[in-house]
Length: 193
Image (cartoon, rainbow, N blue to C red; front, top):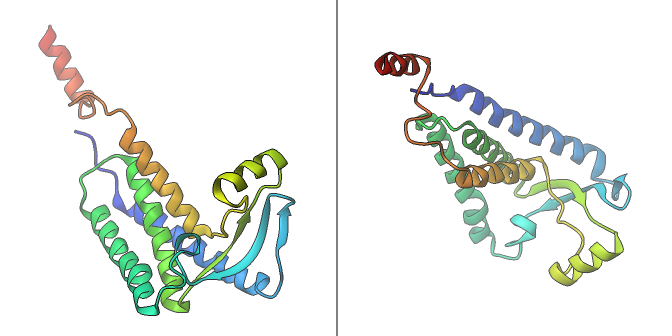
C-alpha cells in the first residue's frame, strides 16, 4: 500500500504562500502606492500598485457592499475551511493534487486576509503585450492586450487550479499497480515459482 504523504508539508506550503503574499503586498503598498508604474521588463511587465474592491478582473466592484461581502469574503472563507478540512482528512496520496490544493489554500487565505483587513485586495503585478500582430489579435479577441493587475495569491490560485486540472486529465495507473511495493512484488515472485 502506498504511504500517505505527510499533511504538514502541504500546510507549510500554504503558510509560505500566505506569508509571501502578505509580505509582497506590504512592500508594494510601501514602495509603489505613491508612484505610477515601475517598468521591470519594458513593453511587457510593470510593478503597478492598485487596490481591487471587486473580484477576478475587477468583476463585482459595482455590486452593493453586502452582496460583494458575501460573494468575495464569506464564500472564500468557506472555501478555505473546506480545503483545510479536505487536506487534513483525505486519504489521497496524489502529490500534485495535494500540492495544487495547498497553493489554492494559501492564495485564497492571502486574498481573504486583504478583504478582512482592508476591504479590498492589493494588486501590483502588471503584464501586457505591445507586439503589433499579437496585440491586434488580443484586442480584437478580448478587447485589450493588457492583463488585469494581479498578485502572488492570484498566481498561486491559478497555478494550483492548473495542477488540479492536469491531475484530473492525467491517465491513472492500473488498479492495484500503485499499491504494489517491494514486499508484494517479492511475494508475487515467490508464488510464480
